[in-house]
Image 1 (cartoon, rainbow, N blue to C red):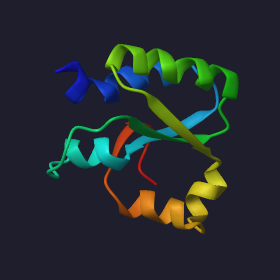
Image 2: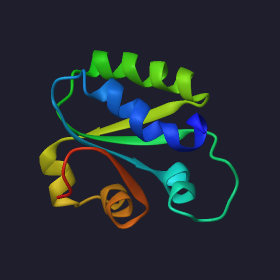
Image 3: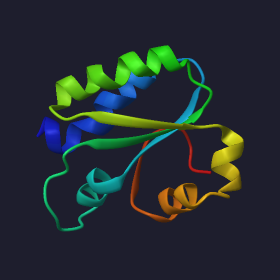
Length: 107
C-alpha cells in the first residue's frame, strides 16, 4: 500500500520542510499508473518541484523519501516563470500528461 499510494503523502512530508517549494507534482509512469493507465510497475518516481527550493535540502529529502518508498525519487526543479511559460517541450509534456499534485495549487 505504501509503494502504491504513499508517494504523494511521503514526498509532501519531505517537501513541506524545504523553503522555496511553491508546488510539486508527480509525473511520468508512476502518475500514469496512479491515474489508472495500464502498464508495468514504475521503477522510479518522477517529481517536479516549482519554485526556488534549497537544492541541498531537496537533494537530501528525495533519497530519504525514496528509501521509505522502495524506489528512487528523481526531481526536476523549475522556477515559477519556467513552469508558467511552458515554452519547452518537457514542460508542455508534463503539463499535458498525467500528473498528481503533491503540494500547492493548480495553476
